[in-house]
Length: 396
Image (cartoon, rainbow, N blue to C red; front, side):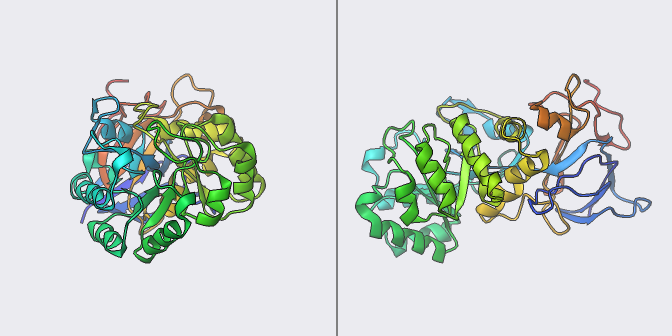
């Protein structure tokens, strides 16, 4: 058993929208899990990290990525992108479909092909912790002609999500509803591409009328992927549905503002989830989830703690994951971060509310320190967290 104490915590963000802040000055990790909040600090621990007054928050959960195999993405012919996102604070990621697989013909997809592709991805990308990140890949791109057997194969392979994007929904209503039922019976959630056509050019247009009868678990990038549905459809969607609504950094900022404002007015931020919708035409964006948080807080007037909760606990829960909330018994996936030199904020909250990028000092996944002292993708925070037997960042 290995114990790690994080002491001298400034702000503590739980990731839980019901209580997004905590009066926590120290945290004890035992092996892979959080053992205690505010433990006795005079005991002997294997490791002690002095947070130097920096904030502790859950690792970010990117609810919309497009991996292929491992850490290579063909869209920008880039290697190592998952590790870069981890340095940007993302510790868990959920695939919205491996549709950028080279040579994949969107106009000739079959039930066996999409199922086999998901199985192969589960057996490869899912099998390895790329840069230690929890990547949940193997999301089948639903097409007509799928049967119970195909959904059995997906469940056995370990898929947690299926997606409507190329499926002609209006022409196959009964089949689409049957798919959502078969998926849920196996503990698999459904996500649907919304708005206009995507970069592929082959996706189906989807607005409120379709979503109102389909009732997926998550409506993907409702603010655009990259083109959003109409204002009227977006307002109707918020007002007349109950499923999760996802906004992504690759979408329309005006529509993101609209949907978040309406959800806040109704007291329904519990429905909001976040993703980057990358890699794709928008590019590779290691700090994409951080930018989402900054936009929600500094432009959409969401409190920093609520923006963090949306990017962590909300997104994790919508996808059935056990991460995103810092409480005893939960996986020890967390960040230590704070404002950078020159920021208008003196605390993490101040910086986020002003739209200033914070600096990440530590990234911890399942209790293991993956990034120590300084992230490669953010400036250093003003105060550098460090192990008690080591000084602050030698490069700052």
